[in-house]
Image 1 (cartoon, rainbow, N blue to C red):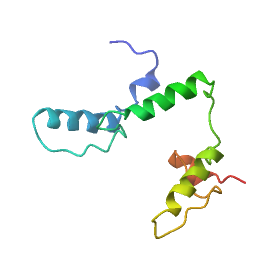
Image 2: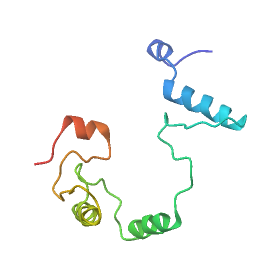
Image 3: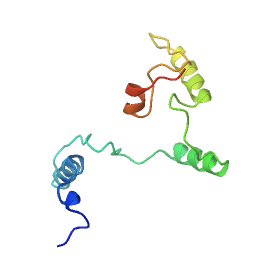
Image 4: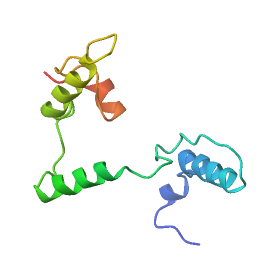
Amino acid sequence: MHSISSRIEKVSPSLTLAVTAQAKAMIANGEEVYALAGGEPEVDTPTFIKEAAIKALMEGRTKYTPSGGIPELRQALSEKFKKGQPYQLRAEPDLRHLRCENGLLQRDP
C-alpha cells in the first residue's frame, strides 16, 4: 500500500485507541472492566442533560466557552457545593478546567 507521505508511515497507531479496543473486547467477553483510557462514558447521557444541550443549541450557544468555564455555571457550582459540603468552592476561576492542557498551561485573569 502506498502512503501519502513517508512521514505518515512513521506515525505509530494511537495507544489510547488500542487500549480502548482491548477494553471493549474484554467487556464483550463478559469481563468486568473499568475502561478509563478513552474518556468515553460507559453509560448513556441522562435525558435532562440531552434536553439542556438541545436547548443550548437552539439558543445559538455553539461557540467555545472561556477556558475557565461559563461564569453562570461556575456560580451555580459554587452555590451547590455550599450545601452540605465540608469545603467551599469559589465561583472565581481557579484550576477548574474542562481540558487538562488549559488547566496546566494557562490561568484566566
